[in-house]
Image (tube, rainbow, N blue to C red; front, side, top):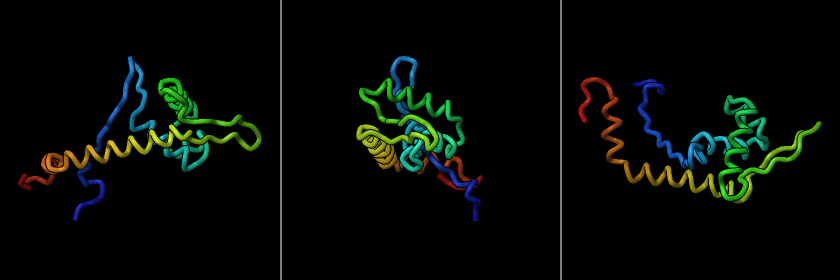
Length: 125
């Protein structure tokens, strides 16, 4: 029996870029999902182990580079302002995850072969 850390995994890392900026990528989508779960940029950043400033910069980049904002944030204060995804932000997450799933299905046979390369010595491909 192998430990979970020994399990070979394949992950697609789709990134949408414009110029030198990453408009959308796996970390940004993870952040959007964390905002949905936590209701705030601060809590989402904490859940993902990143600084609030880094999370805010990622949100700002998405809101500037995507045709309309994907996150709306309320003003802070004693109770905090909170953050939510806009309908476009929700759709971005759904479609990004759908692209990942479609790519994994399309490449399933090749992925099995490539993953076998990282198998135990003596395993055949």
